[in-house]
Length: 97
Image 1 (cartoon, helix red, strand yellow):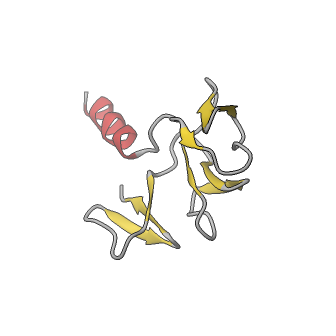
Image 2 (cartoon, one colour; image 1 turned 90 degrees about the horizontal axis):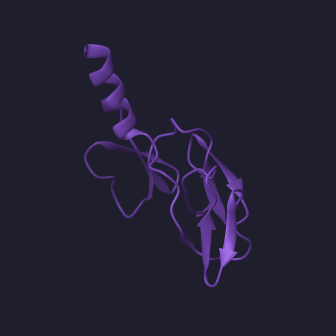
């Protein structure tokens, strides 16, 4: 049972499922254009708009940063200091584990 709880806690800190993004140029890998949005396919990974270099655990795909794996940490754009439970990675804050 402890392993199951640890797995659930770890999954909670991983990048969330892919979601539609506002379109900025070409859509990232795994997404398709739908009006002014990039819509994820079933195999798409979580993405964030690119601001400088991509954070650790992400790679560049056009004007976006894509999670390298399903276990990549959640990335959010950095605005000042990172919130509690997050640490700085370039212009992003990544969830701590």
